[in-house]
Amino acid sequence: ESIDNGSVTWKSPSNIALIKYWGKKEDQIPQNPSISFTLDACATVTTLTYKKREGNQDDFSFELFFEGKQKDDFKPKINTFLERILKYLPFLKNYHFTIETSNSFPHSSGIASSASGMSALALCFMSLEKELNPTMTEEDFNKKTSFLARLGSGSASRSIEGDLIVWGKHEDTIGSNDLFAIKYPYKVHEIFKNFHDTILLVDKGEKQVSSTVGHNLMHNHPFSQQRFAQAHENLTKMQSVLADGDLDQFIAIVESEALTLHAMMMTSMPYFILMKPNTLEIINRIWKFRQESGTHICFTLDAGANVHVLYPENEKDKVYPFIQQELVKFCQNGHHICDRIGFGAKKA
Ligand code: PMV
Image 1 (cartoon, protein in one colour):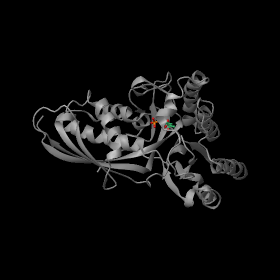
Image 2 (spheres, rainbow, N blue to C red):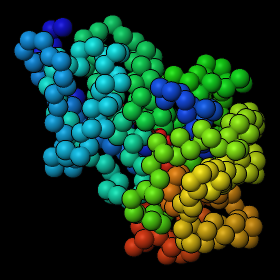
Image 3 (cartoon, rainbow, N blue to C red):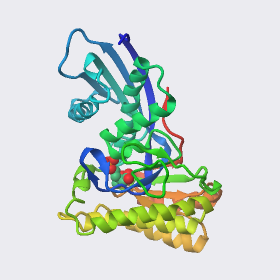
Image 4 (cartoon, rainbow, N blue to C red):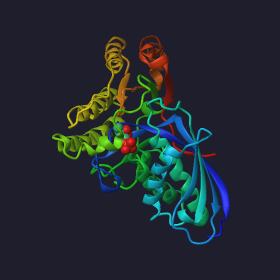
């Protein structure tokens, strides 16, 4: 190890699952495969500064700044992440790290920052790994980064590349596996190019249920096995949808996946309702507008009340005015984010 000090910056995006990951085994192994659109505007920028420490060290040494301010309450989470990845990056205790991170989306907007945040951090550590092992190929770099990001947050494994990403072993998807995410390996119809995701911030409050608690509730869940099997079937169906550009079938799968995710939470013990009245108001208006306009607007949800509104590029002149006039009023302070499908993380 000959690198004494240095600094690296990565910008890593968030992603939105079309087929949801919900339920995991030991070591962040997913119970079912998932597929996501990488986003473009919603991202985390992280700078990692590293400095070699003297002698043998048996602890980690790092400071953390979030949006310019020292953030000690995030430290335990980062420490757990470092513990998990030390096996794969044995140099981690030999350096002192300064981690400076900020999000492009507003803090506590109810947008999960774990996918973009954990992938950005994994990318920074991997840049140091690459300095120490310069012969590493780009393919190996991406695989290992996704593998490490997974150990931070499962969905973070899907944020390294774009534009469509599969994570989790699936019998009909070549190369898919539980350990790291891959680019969707088949040809995709051009209707999915530049697909839009307008994110409606219905509720910016703290999450009622952390995703850790949510995943764990799938362990003794009466419908878990059917749900995991359904995700496999939906991913197989999604493959012909993506090949043919069949937007009606796309909508049927994506909306059913979103509602199934929430149905799992409503039928767990303890049970939760994460949708708000305005979430339902928005969904009903999307359905009505879709019928009246003949457009292919649809929605998906994460583990919260916010609504992701999806639509193709060639319908944006009809759909976006509708969103502005009829949906934005259900957002907290009218807050929404115009995002679209993106191509993965970039080194600054
Ligand atoms: O990455 P986690 O552990 O926060 O899980 C996220 C799960 C969902 O966002 C609800 C679905 C998904 O596949 O992203």
